[in-house]
Image (cartoon, rainbow, N blue to C red; front, side, top):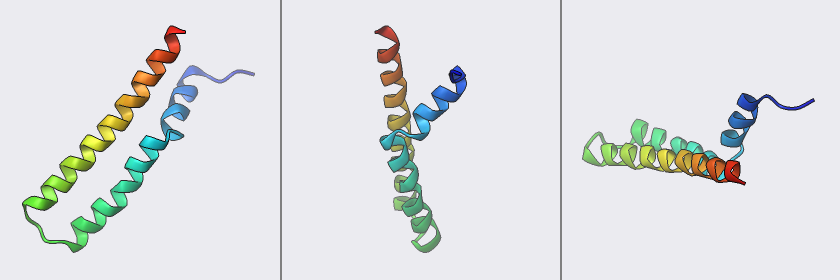
Amino acid sequence: MGQRPREAALRRYIFNWSVLSSLFGAVGVLQATRRGPRDWRLILIWIAWLINVALAVGTVVEDSRDGEEW
């Protein structure tokens, strides 16, 4: 029994270390949002976290495209 392509693609994102670490980084961002001051630095924290998530997901996409070429 083989995996369905959609499940394999989802598993690729879930078990990637860069995606996992960026998602766990959300814990710190949420704590800073709850406890810290509401100023321009909070906006920068959220922007940095979103860029981190985008880079992690983009890396998985590129890796999967490279794997399909083989």
